[in-house]
Image (cartoon, rainbow over all chains, first blue to last red; front, side, top):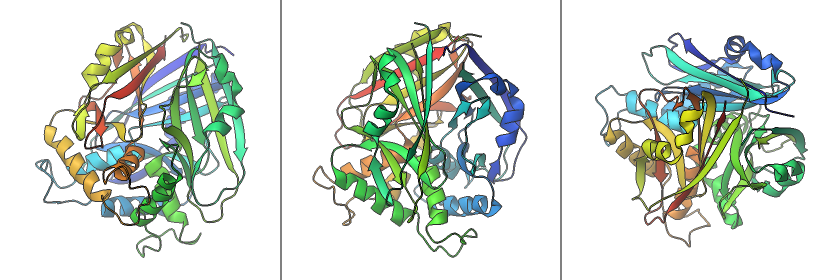
Length: 143
Length: 143
Length: 143
């Protein structure tokens, strides 16, 4: 099959509270052209360094609460060894969480749908206490 | 060069013990069409939230044992702060390990081969004590 | 739009000190063909298991120092439980850091430019005390 199609869309997600948020449906709504791709891949990219994207459990909201618990314990605030501390105690930990989770997810497309597992959803991970809007670039290609 | 080819294959990997397992050869066997691509990219995606994929050292099996040691120490079981605990003590840690490592790897293709470094191999990371089969989607594209 | 273009380039980065280094401009210089792509994606892949790639803050160099601080505290050296220890105390931690951060980043292309956020830069993360050169494969495709 030839790779005859590539689509790209920028979207802005209004400010969300610190924590982990399911955005799978929002992605699908933003790029309905995915439905025209038989075989392909979709990348979702976040243009920030204090928020991130990951794929995880889409059903039980307590999983997302436990993600916040784990990352707060593992990437502690107010570490006196941090040099970059003038943007608040949540700033440097936000950068580190962002790189641990990553700023991009890549999902196969099959028969016009994101080929996610039954329990997989796309998370927007907001690591700042007072976030602004977050800009995402969605790119999908295939045949 | 034009991107004239895209291939996709779903494979099922029989249950593996908890730990880190090399699956590079299994991927190559599953999608021999990679050999027809001069320049391209291959994505391997796992459709689960309690197992993951990563790329690391392919020679010394003790590296894979040490991965299990590190992740067990860093993502502890039986944390009394976890809310999501009804699927067993290994469940919530499995979700977190899955996002720390990621559910997808992306490897360049050159001259019909995965362009991995000499010491790089693809790991299936099984985070559950009693796993079932794991479904992977392999997608390769290029010219 | 059709996916009419795919480019690939291998580059070698001379040895860098242990730590986190901005390489965005180096990537752009290595693959100027990115400028010919209106809509696309660029992957940067490192062919090693003791160095890694990530995207994070591009302005304040103290962020990169704090990354080194965090990862050294979180992935400790000389853990007596490690079996793989004959290449020095920095070796097994380097493998783990490499998988926590990942060996590849993927960036959208729009209008001939990497579509990074204003504060995003590409980091080469060197985890060894005495590194040799690092080989990268850059692949860009689109229309």
